[in-house]
Image (cartoon, rainbow, N blue to C red; front, side):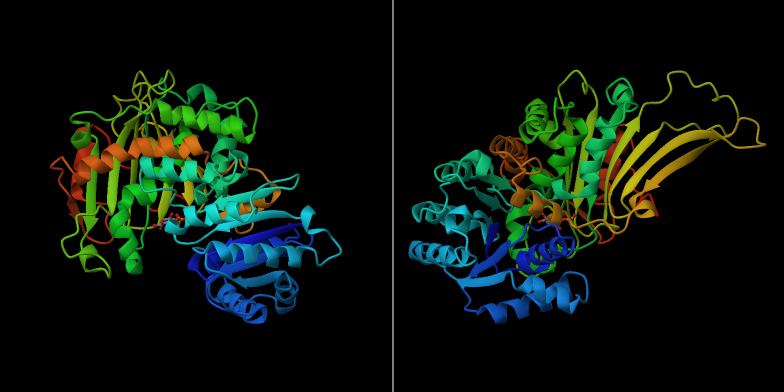
Length: 487
Ligand code: BG6
């Protein structure tokens, strides 16, 4: 038996992601029996109004009409309590409300587990945590009390450290679940399976066979109405510190001894520690930044903004496995298409046997992990063109999840379920978040303060500024610019 308390319940995240995901879990019979979901925000609603509003938003934002009867069953688990997260006294009231609700079913309130989900504005995280502590709502006393914190976790290393220590004053690390929704994506988890449940990749997953790795998170959407937030964040805080570094960690990590939260996170943290810090010219030589044309006219964006909506970084992981293998990370808004992919670019064969034949045109192998959309895996290999002497052509082996499975679940289903059942494997640990900021912070500072870094511009619908393409070509490499490689 559990209560999930969602702070920031009238916000977009709750309506768009959390409630639709919880409803899907209910439909799949995965929510533990008598789980209650209590929304908390300032707006005064009664339970009935709240349930009606959530039904509407689940239909309009969460993927179409819902089965009315099933919704009504689910809605009986939804409750609403109006409270102001910035006021300590409201937490005393909230605690009273929750205990009353929890003791309703002939069950003592002391036996009910709780998950507190902070989906509020980030500046309210610290006060909410302090007030949970002061109201005696965090102490475990034999029954679990978990805290889920949405991103962004801080805006740099110092603020992340401060938030960690404020959180640790009230909750112990095993109670804290820091969200990075990329970890809830099936294809990201599948990357671990690809690497660690198959023996054929391990021997070649290193500097001896891999020339470089490209990790691209391209978004087709523009900043739209998020300009106010985005202009302070920029692409490095919004996408790199969290999502792109998570993809890098899982691509580069060593196999953990066991698939347990701390073992997995230990290996990921080692990757962050091994990333070579930038120094001197690295800030100019190993980064590209860009802004899409039209960004400065977005609502909430200053007309002279120099915020990057696109970035590419070249990182090195200093380890035996990866010495000399650059990791290129790239992400942007307003790009050609929505496509998140990890490209493992293998080396050329050591001796090019077929070079002398006209039309041979050999190209090195490439493994593309298509994270989204068109989720799947795609391997490019050379093959002989029949009846054409020794002409070669790239041949493609592909696997698409949709060929074998129905629609993949949204990442929040998995993450909410793990938070309810107490599995923190797919959440970021305190040291992980701080180290990730430690990688990104110096680049942000170099871009914002000292260095005269050019800001390339690009039209909406391009793969970033032209300078990014030439930068790659100067290194004798090319971006793999394919809008979902699988169809
Ligand atoms: C969020 C960023 O964390 O991730 C957004 O704040 C971005 O700017 C989003 O659009 C991308 O998530 P997804 O799952 O659509 O790739």
